[in-house]
Image (cartoon, rainbow, N blue to C red; front, side, top):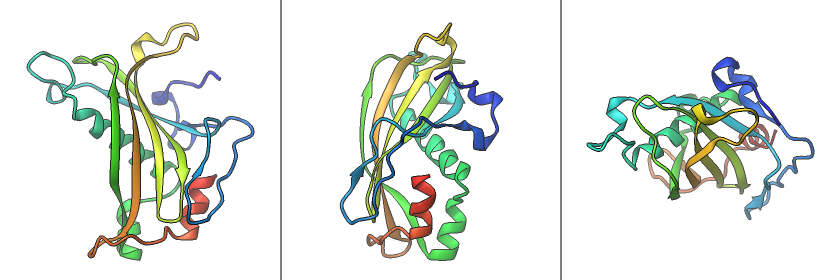
Length: 176
């Protein structure tokens, strides 16, 4: 599927939907959403502050890029994290990350950072994320994969940090 460049889309149009996405059920166990579904894309430019002494993106900054993409994905679904915390007293927190680095990004590179819901349970969800080199997307060729990760996000009480069930209204937004 060829989608317009992320910088040419509005927030709602950054989701690329594939036909036949399976909606996960709302039980207490995580359920795989599968590889078919919505892939959110967010553009990121590499600045001096993102690079190390060698002129490449410092490895930990990919986590920042992934965080930005996840936050914008939630916003595209009408989920504002500060509003959630203010209204419910709960919030999303990262509980586990696994990253694999394939190739470095460099100063001034344009990236496309993706987020795709992979598993969803009642108190957590797992996303698959990628950082791709935008400038190498030519004639339908796949973009160069720079970094990929699996990020597990938990729903916790804001003060005690104890796990809580994700509200049904939020689960419904995430499923669609």
